Amino acid sequence: MAFAKNVSQVDEGLKNELGKKGIVVTTINELYNWGRRSSIWPMQFGLACCAIEMIATACARYDIARFGAELFRASPRQADLIIIAGTVTKKMAPQVVRLYNQMAEPKYCITMGACSIAGGPFIDGYNVLRGIDRYIPVDIHLPGCPPRPEALLYGLQELQRRIDDQEIEKNEWYQKGLKREYPIPEFGPHGLVPKYNPEIWNPRIEDTRKERYGEPILIGKKTKAPDLDAPPAPPRTAAAQAAPVPPKPPAATPPPKA
Amino acid sequence: MTTEEIKILIEKALPGVKLKLVRDSILVENAPDLTRVAKFLKEDPALRFDYLSSVTGSDYLTFLESVYHLYSMEKKGPGLTLRARTDRQNPRVPSLVPVFRGAEFQERESYDMYGIVYENHPDLRRIFMWDGFEGFPMRKDYEQEDSETLEACDVDWLEKHGVPVPAEIKQKAEALKREGKRAMARKPGDTEPA
Image 1 (cartoon, rainbow over the protein chains, first blue to last red):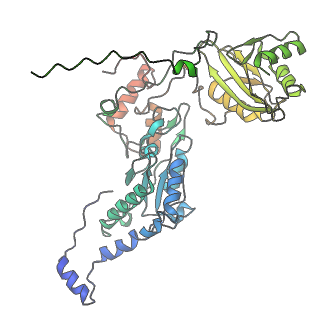
Image 2 (image 1 turned 45 degrees about the vertical axis):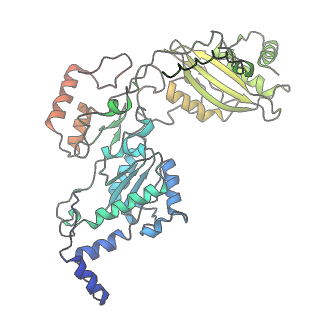
Image 3 (image 1 turned 135 degrees about the horizontal axis):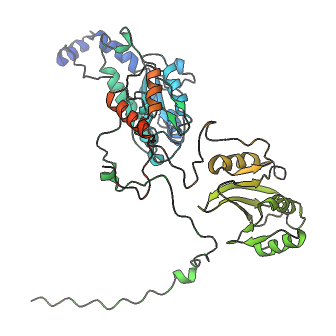
């Protein structure tokens, strides 16, 4: 989805002056988007620990209702926002794509937390999908492990800003021939088939992971195993820990100032 | 009661069972004896290990191991670890389901991850991975697929579902298929890809 800032044609100052006299100047777009962004219905769908933060966000303390998104629906057909809160395992991924397909247009997607963005700490695992954006389009990527409720609220506001910037005449779900059903991956003998949907996602050409985080942990064949028959390492006892530290040699006296 | 004392008790009650102490746990050297040992540990009035807390697998490269953690709800004493070893080619360990009903799902998990076949298990099939998954992912020689490279089966699937595949990806997948290779993840010791 392409987003361009919606700039009002009406002068901001004039609008304020007219507002004081009780005259409201607006555009269809503004009014329509105000209504849409102020009543987002998220789906009641959690996968892992991020879901706990999502629940906290919906509760009284953080209160997502302040932003008009409190109505968590248990059915994808009644929701227009899917918050993918948690690790998407390969076994769960087809169901997530299916749920997204079942949602009514216009629909939005927030990936919450490192796992659903790129696999998170489980990126090298055999069982975890490296980011749900391989199969469905994502509007907001919300990093964190897990993100704080404030971060989710910020992500929601960011999504609202994006909804604000859409034009109803150009919105793709009002156009003819909109294809928004994404193929559901299947279980293969070694993982999911396909590994990703090249229409939506492609591997990064330059992988900066090594630069940023150092040598990656290599997966695959492992060649070491502990020898159980060898005598175990002597336990670290309290006495050994409290062994007297050898006294430091007396600090050399600084040379007298010349 | 220490592990050594328990070992002596078992040896006295079940002559012919070979046991060995491995780091404060008891190794049942002959795996088929395991059911007898477990039954004795559960039913002996002095021990009463009536709770099987976990069944795990473990890969030591030359052999596979099935590890059991037993506790006594009645005696509230310390736990006991039992081990049984099998070879990698045809790993077989008797199932403990006839003794501890709760072993069923845990043995299925161990089978799923390590491929240890529990004999006489009532329903031995995969529990976490889907049916049709090949290989046992927690074994040390399991090779993982490279999740960034599409292969011929992926390309076929995508085209069948009406997704246009870029020509470059197609060529790569075909080249892999011609060579009869699969795209695998890099392993420790592999050279850096050019």
